[in-house]
Length: 150
Image (cartoon, rainbow, N blue to C red; front, side, top):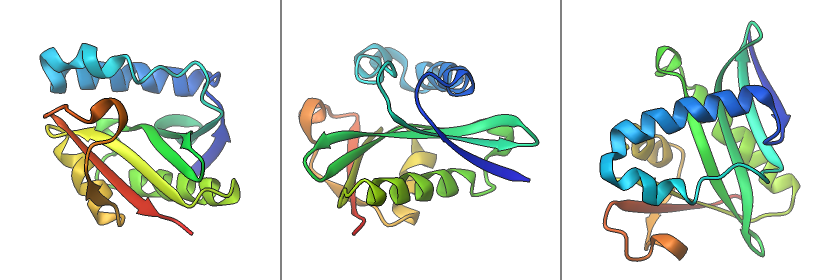
Protein backbone atom coordinates (compact mmCIF):
# COMPACT_ATOMS: atom_id res chain seq x y z
CA UNK A 1 0.00 0.00 0.00
CA UNK A 2 1.26 3.47 -0.93
CA UNK A 3 1.04 6.22 1.67
CA UNK A 4 1.81 9.86 0.91
CA UNK A 5 2.67 11.97 3.94
CA UNK A 6 2.86 15.76 4.07
CA UNK A 7 5.58 16.94 6.40
CA UNK A 8 8.54 19.33 6.53
CA UNK A 9 12.31 19.08 6.19
CA UNK A 10 12.76 18.00 9.81
CA UNK A 11 11.24 14.61 8.93
CA UNK A 12 13.92 11.95 9.57
CA UNK A 13 12.83 9.83 6.62
CA UNK A 14 13.04 12.82 4.29
CA UNK A 15 16.55 13.58 5.57
CA UNK A 16 17.62 9.97 4.88
CA UNK A 17 16.15 10.06 1.38
CA UNK A 18 17.88 13.35 0.61
CA UNK A 19 21.22 11.81 1.62
CA UNK A 20 20.58 9.02 -0.91
CA UNK A 21 19.58 11.63 -3.50
CA UNK A 22 22.74 13.63 -2.89
CA UNK A 23 24.89 10.50 -3.32
CA UNK A 24 23.08 9.68 -6.56
CA UNK A 25 23.51 13.23 -7.87
CA UNK A 26 27.18 13.35 -6.89
CA UNK A 27 27.70 10.34 -9.14
CA UNK A 28 25.56 11.67 -12.00
CA UNK A 29 26.76 15.28 -11.91
CA UNK A 30 30.42 14.62 -11.26
CA UNK A 31 32.40 17.84 -11.04
CA UNK A 32 29.22 19.94 -11.30
CA UNK A 33 27.78 18.52 -8.06
CA UNK A 34 29.32 21.08 -5.70
CA UNK A 35 27.79 23.93 -7.68
CA UNK A 36 24.28 22.44 -7.50
CA UNK A 37 24.62 21.32 -3.91
CA UNK A 38 24.72 24.91 -2.66
CA UNK A 39 21.13 25.41 -3.91
CA UNK A 40 19.73 22.21 -2.44
CA UNK A 41 19.88 22.80 1.29
CA UNK A 42 16.85 21.48 3.14
CA UNK A 43 17.03 23.45 6.40
CA UNK A 44 13.84 25.43 5.87
CA UNK A 45 11.54 23.44 3.61
CA UNK A 46 8.02 23.67 5.00
CA UNK A 47 6.30 21.61 2.32
CA UNK A 48 7.71 18.11 1.95
CA UNK A 49 6.15 14.89 0.69
CA UNK A 50 7.44 11.46 1.69
CA UNK A 51 6.11 8.33 -0.03
CA UNK A 52 5.93 5.12 2.00
CA UNK A 53 5.13 1.53 1.22
CA UNK A 54 4.47 -0.62 4.28
CA UNK A 55 5.98 2.15 6.42
CA UNK A 56 9.19 2.09 4.35
CA UNK A 57 10.14 5.53 2.96
CA UNK A 58 11.23 5.32 -0.66
CA UNK A 59 10.35 8.58 -2.41
CA UNK A 60 10.17 12.30 -1.71
CA UNK A 61 9.83 15.79 -3.06
CA UNK A 62 9.42 19.33 -1.75
CA UNK A 63 8.25 22.76 -2.78
CA UNK A 64 9.38 26.19 -1.68
CA UNK A 65 8.33 29.69 -2.62
CA UNK A 66 10.35 31.20 -5.45
CA UNK A 67 8.39 34.44 -5.82
CA UNK A 68 4.82 35.67 -5.52
CA UNK A 69 2.55 33.06 -7.09
CA UNK A 70 5.45 30.81 -8.09
CA UNK A 71 6.68 27.76 -6.22
CA UNK A 72 9.83 25.77 -6.96
CA UNK A 73 9.89 21.96 -6.95
CA UNK A 74 12.92 20.61 -5.10
CA UNK A 75 14.49 17.35 -3.90
CA UNK A 76 12.51 14.90 -6.05
CA UNK A 77 13.79 11.35 -5.52
CA UNK A 78 12.68 7.73 -5.77
CA UNK A 79 14.94 4.91 -4.64
CA UNK A 80 16.16 2.84 -7.59
CA UNK A 81 14.24 -0.34 -6.78
CA UNK A 82 10.95 1.61 -6.81
CA UNK A 83 11.48 3.49 -10.07
CA UNK A 84 9.21 2.81 -13.02
CA UNK A 85 6.11 2.53 -10.81
CA UNK A 86 4.92 6.14 -11.33
CA UNK A 87 5.77 7.02 -7.72
CA UNK A 88 7.56 10.23 -8.75
CA UNK A 89 4.49 11.30 -10.75
CA UNK A 90 2.30 10.69 -7.71
CA UNK A 91 4.63 12.71 -5.46
CA UNK A 92 4.83 15.50 -8.04
CA UNK A 93 1.04 15.60 -8.40
CA UNK A 94 0.64 15.83 -4.63
CA UNK A 95 3.17 18.69 -4.51
CA UNK A 96 1.20 20.51 -7.22
CA UNK A 97 -2.05 19.98 -5.30
CA UNK A 98 -0.44 21.37 -2.16
CA UNK A 99 0.88 24.36 -4.12
CA UNK A 100 -2.66 25.06 -5.41
CA UNK A 101 -4.01 24.90 -1.86
CA UNK A 102 -1.39 27.51 -0.94
CA UNK A 103 -2.63 29.70 -3.85
CA UNK A 104 0.37 29.31 -6.12
CA UNK A 105 -0.34 29.38 -9.84
CA UNK A 106 2.91 28.10 -11.32
CA UNK A 107 5.57 25.52 -10.48
CA UNK A 108 9.13 25.87 -11.73
CA UNK A 109 12.11 23.58 -11.37
CA UNK A 110 15.65 22.92 -12.49
CA UNK A 111 17.25 19.62 -13.36
CA UNK A 112 20.55 18.67 -14.91
CA UNK A 113 20.92 17.62 -18.53
CA UNK A 114 22.34 14.30 -17.30
CA UNK A 115 19.13 13.58 -15.36
CA UNK A 116 17.40 11.89 -18.31
CA UNK A 117 14.75 10.17 -16.14
CA UNK A 118 13.89 13.45 -14.42
CA UNK A 119 13.57 15.29 -17.73
CA UNK A 120 11.18 12.63 -19.01
CA UNK A 121 9.20 12.73 -15.75
CA UNK A 122 8.64 16.47 -15.98
CA UNK A 123 7.73 16.41 -19.67
CA UNK A 124 5.32 13.52 -19.10
CA UNK A 125 3.64 15.52 -16.33
CA UNK A 126 3.03 18.63 -18.42
CA UNK A 127 6.12 20.71 -17.69
CA UNK A 128 7.51 22.90 -20.47
CA UNK A 129 11.12 23.87 -21.02
CA UNK A 130 11.83 27.53 -20.21
CA UNK A 131 14.93 29.74 -20.21
CA UNK A 132 17.10 29.06 -17.20
CA UNK A 133 16.12 31.21 -14.22
CA UNK A 134 17.86 32.65 -11.17
CA UNK A 135 21.14 31.03 -10.26
CA UNK A 136 20.86 28.66 -13.26
CA UNK A 137 20.74 31.42 -15.93
CA UNK A 138 24.18 30.86 -17.39
CA UNK A 139 24.63 27.22 -16.41
CA UNK A 140 24.98 25.08 -19.51
CA UNK A 141 24.25 21.81 -17.70
CA UNK A 142 20.88 23.03 -16.32
CA UNK A 143 17.42 22.69 -17.83
CA UNK A 144 14.53 24.63 -16.32
CA UNK A 145 10.84 23.83 -16.62
CA UNK A 146 7.49 25.36 -15.66
CA UNK A 147 3.89 24.28 -15.33
CA UNK A 148 0.83 26.43 -14.69
CA UNK A 149 -1.27 24.71 -12.04
CA UNK A 150 -4.33 26.93 -11.64
